Image (cartoon, rainbow, N blue to C red; front, top):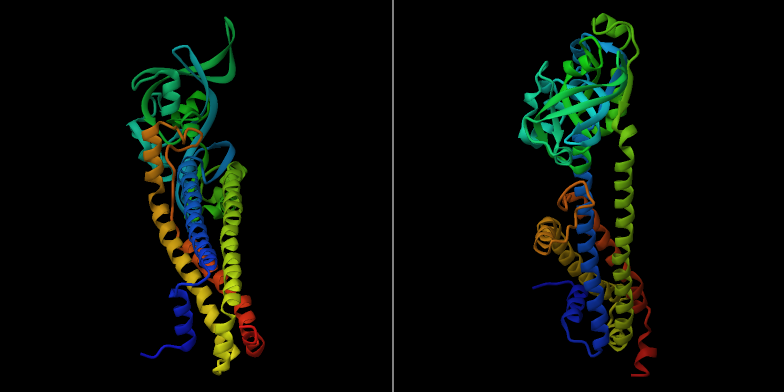
Amino acid sequence: MFRPLALFIGLRYTRAERSNRFISFISLISMVGLTLGVAVLITVLSVMNGFDRELKTRILGMVPQATVTSPEVIGDWQALADRIEEDPEVIAVAPFIQLQGMLTSNGQVAGIMVTGVEPEYEKNVSIINEHMTEGSIDTLKNGDFSIVLGEAMVQSLGLNIGDKVTLVLPEASPSPAGVIPRFKRFTLTGVFSISPEVDSLMAFIPMNDAAKLLRLPAGAQGIRMKLNDIFKAPQAAQQAAAISPQAAQQAAAISPVQLYPSDWTQTHGNLFGAIQMEKAMVGLLLFLIILVAAFNIVSSLVMLVTDKKADIAILKTFGASPRLITQVFMVQGVVIGVIGTVAGTILGVVFALSVSDILGWINQSFGLNLFDAYFINYLPSQLRLTDVVLITGASFVLSFLATIYPARRAARIQPAQTLRYE
């Protein structure tokens, strides 16, 4: 069966047992280094992708992606919401009223950010309904003064479903007994669990009850949006705010009033910026492992060329061209690169798909509490085809480039001068 001569000789050199075991050892080390570099890089980038995904789904699942708010109450907010939904980037909208206060129960006090919502709309823009551990967001009925709290807040206040909790507003009201803070008792009807930070900071009540508590007329303070592409949030918020005042008057949504846009990049953009920067820096540092393995390929091939000078001289004596000699030794380097890259890719993909289960088992078996410092209780991992292709391609390219210098050096060997000393 016909095979190119350069490929035949190169593969034979690769399979043959070398007289110099040290060269074989260096080649093995470079192959193992390439395998580990590719595997670790794929695994670590998958974990970073997992954290990025969890931030987007959990944090931005609760925090508004984009909003427009008004200093005055938006009476007919439905008309304004309909106009905003005309934007093809907007998936769903929901009205809200937001206030800050303190919750107190069983002698415990904690600060809280309370959002007045309409449950049927809120379910379309938030992930809260998928993360309810007790009750439902549908239990928020106007006039019932019900409240839904996070699991961390419920535990810190020692509450159970049906218990009363007092919301104290940072606003004083005059009375015959003097100035006293405004407060209202609510009934706990639901508990959600998303992340410790979110659970301890957010609470939900019916929107009309929030308006009554703030002594506002019926309506909303703003409109929250869920988008197809979260990175288009600034443009979507600006476009929604541009509806006012003329378009809003035509829609009979609100009286002439300014709408103020806001989006997640202003409130939580630093979190995602930090994740992206960390991913880039970690990827760069781990890529150096692959680079070191490529340099090992260079050193092993240089020593191999020195060891095979006599063979090269004999091949040239039989008429082998410098190009053929170059191809022979490039085949050897490429074989090392291919085997190391393929093995590393397989190992990396396996680890990326199983690292969550492995670390979860270790954490549970030994009680290490590895994830207490994070906003989730497991190690997320998301394998992306683009990362695998990029890492594999870079490894192949580096392996190929590492063969050029040793192969060209082999091609420049002079047969007569070499055989004189053999």
